Length: 152
Image (cartoon, helix red, strand yellow):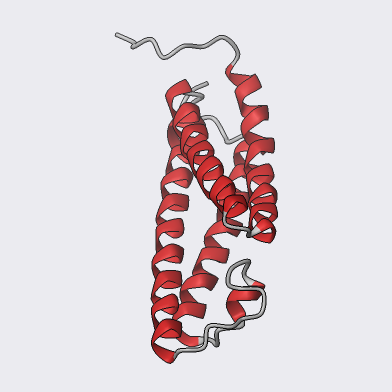
């Protein structure tokens, strides 16, 4: 595949999922800056009863959501750049990089969410991971037996 070829449906699908996740992350940033504490529950985070009582604690939690949303946006922009460039050219290292970063996130975030008793957040992660996994598995099949041998 050359760099001038059009993206496949799987490339476009993956970019749509990345866009949805980035939009969600932007919602975390906005919620952290401007909206009330119960919005976090609707975005998949926060205690079930919304019981963060101290004002200084609520203010700090908002900072955490701003940081979390910002980091997710940066992560999605990086994935989008990989999808639009080297992954579109079916460079194996790009696929490995995306799968490695998504896998590390999923194992750590989901595992620790379960350990800490936040099964709802873990279930949210499964939906997010599935959205990324479907196009990534399809793209992996398109990679075939290619390897990351340098070209001269």
